[in-house]
Image (cartoon, rainbow, N blue to C red; front, side):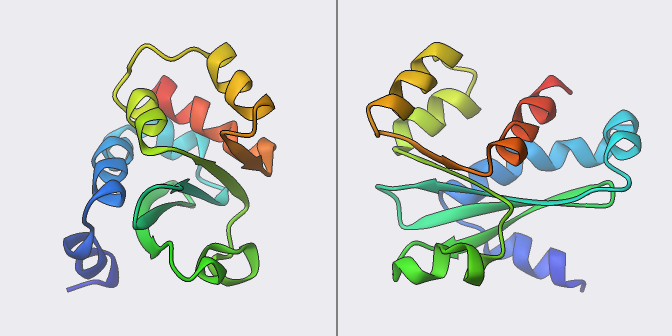
Length: 133
């Protein structure tokens, strides 16, 4: 059994939901071609949740890893080795992932009111590309 299969079985909660949404891209040939030379890690952290989801794009393959939110050091860039970071509440993530009624303007509003946090925006914007497939 490969490391990815073992890790995939252990996903629970928020990382499991994110995994179901993005791992479908592994079957899309256009995604594989567009990301064949890229290595990107994006951490999605629901600040009111127990676990964060680390989306890993590795040369045309995408998978999700789970990272505990506590202690806070475990989600820091030097420990989790992410390129992009997006943090907000679980409800907002549910709206984004579930195709809910949230607009880009509402996300910007959350950033301005400090209800959401983004680091490495260039990489976080890659998420928009992912949802286009």
